Amino acid sequence: MEIIDAIILGIIQGLTEFLPVSSSGHLEIGKALLGDDSMPEESLMVTVVLHFATALSTIVVFRKDIADILRGLFQFKWNSETIFSMKIILSMIPAAFVGLFFEEQLELLFGGNLLFVGFMLLITALLLWLADKAKNTEKPVSYANAFVIGFAQAIALLPGISRSGATISTSVLLGNDKTKAARFSFLMVVPLILGKIAKDLLFGDLSNTTMELTPLLAGFIAAFVAGFAACTWMIQLVRKSKLSYFAVYCFIVGLIAIIYEYSNV
Image 1 (tube, rainbow, N blue to C red):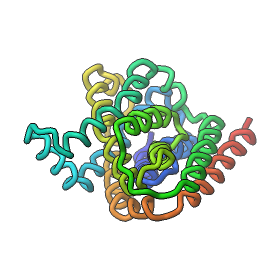
Image 2 (image 1 turned 180 degrees about the vertical axis):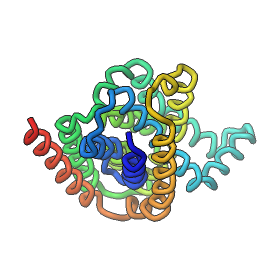
Image 3 (image 1 turned 45 degrees about the vertical axis):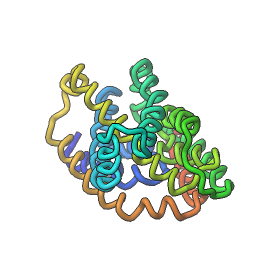
């Protein structure tokens, strides 16, 4: 992969991570348009590295929230921070299970299969459209809600299913407040991505690749910078704007991906 291609993919990842439009789906589309011919394992590694960069940007943007949670945890009391942390851990279980036991199957889907990505984007569009019809409330995320949202996050491991779109939509459809749903959605993915990176480092998934370090580093930096910039002004857009706007966008991009794939058969 060339450095300029890695930077482009990093910018795509950074800009789309915080909108419910599937960053993984856009990465697969971007890789296909850039003529990426890497093996599925290398393609997935690029996706993981770029997601790690935006996870770091999330930590920076939500540093005050994370600091408050950590301070509350170190009080060793059953306080609101501890309760929130337990919900985050609960939400991680489904995606962690899928990631541990179905990783090889997932890798095969990260090889530029635009037909699959296109149909998954259509599903994302449907989820967003349904969530847009739900009434906004002030209900917080419960333990049961956190586990169900975790299932949505597990499904969103598929390229084309927006993680934030799936988790926020599921939360809203469960009757939760949109602002609380957005905050929970962005924070719940951080430990999951960090855990994935730790697993790859421990078991050598990243060291076995033949890809050069420079393009990966360039993509990482681009994703972090774009993600930080996007997160600071796009989170409010996600929370306040109608999800139907993003539903229409995902529907259009999904159709384009499907048509593009069929036209190249």
